[in-house]
Length: 206
Image (spheres, rainbow, N blue to C red):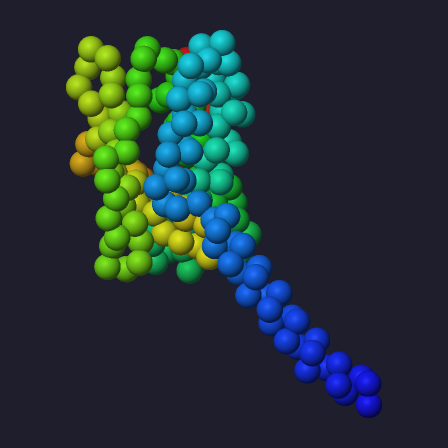
């Protein structure tokens, strides 16, 4: 009898705990704007000691920053498009891993030193599909500003960057142009070689 009486009480307690947990998660989850702001701050921090770190040091410092702010699996899927479903699970994992390394390598190569640059977030807007676009710009002393439009989606755990448009040029569009044709015409192994060659070239252009 006691057990029967306790069951409804336990169910109520579990429901309340679940609600509290959901509220706590919502409170700790960074907004799209905060995700971009944090990532830009991490980029600047690495740039300020970029020369001392060297390429390998910048890569190591930026790996977690990119992994926690970008939806790297979604990026890989978007780049490959319909070809993604034709890949085996192991190939999908390998492709996501190598695209992750490519993203980090690109940042380590392009943000290598500091000369007074600053990031500024200008505005944000909601998209029709539930995403957010964060508009920002990089001020470079003695040069013109670079405009960045960060496209983010909520993956259930946090807002993540899925594309960056720099001065009107889409990073995803460039990747699709570079790599989809290789996969279709030359195969998966040839694509992996091409991406790994790109990563290797970044490391050599110090």
